[in-house]
Image 1 (cartoon, each protein chain N blue to C red):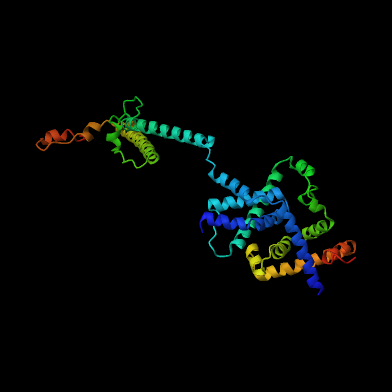
Image 2 (image 1 turned 135 degrees about the vertical axis):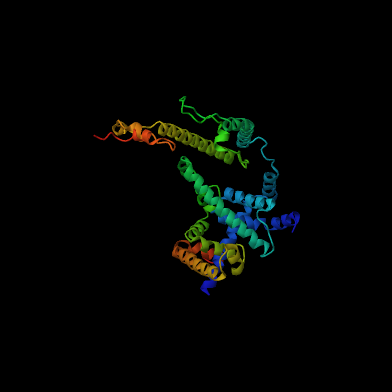
Length: 186
Length: 183
């Protein structure tokens, strides 16, 4: 696959790639953009080479995941090194709580995001890949670099825990839920 | 049934998230071009550490060249060094070092090996010269040595004892050698 062809393919996958990068970067937009740029750079420099062993989407997602993990580690080290980083973190707002995003202000979404955040990383990833990206469990397993059995376990446990945590607050947000399912009700 | 309903809920929530993400998604062209510009960015021409390393290397090479050009001369000097003399009369180390030790210069494989071999040879020469001098001194001393009790062995008939009779001497003459008998 030559670079022009690959570029066209990447363009069609850009939206999904950004969503996955955003998830891998704990919904930090700037970091997600940086990660995506690094991934494209890796592809251009030939550091990440698609050999056609898997589908382009799963390969790209695996590269994004690894890059995001690497970037996260670098950021942690950078924060540890710089003494004034504590001050910076104090002033900066967590990406999940950015007030600028009207979307994040939505109570249902905030509840959902918090519930997702409380899940272990693997479970979160499995749920995102299946529900958000519409991948099969085997494809999700390829992206996560684990066996399909483990992926199924993470997926089932994640779904169960998410349901539980959403159900706990259903009394408070139940009306909202039902409105979504059946706008005519209530 | 309820499980399916929960799944639907989760799916709906995720699709909401997806819609929101699409709104804040950067354009593909922008991200791609930025990545491309990073790859095509020319490398810095002037690298300070590279320059320092090159300068150091050049200095090392120049000093090595100078040292190797000086080396053969100093080696010759070591090979023809006259033996150390104490100034005494018993000194025997009059020959040049080459003759005394039979020193033959070894073919030089490397600078460090060569210098080590030469140092070793010079040390060996010095040891041999010292040993020769000592041996000569000892030989001289033994030649003129006398026992301290040699005087006690002297007597009046030393002449008789030390001289030998000749074959054609007469009896009368030989009698003179005999001690006088009382008549």
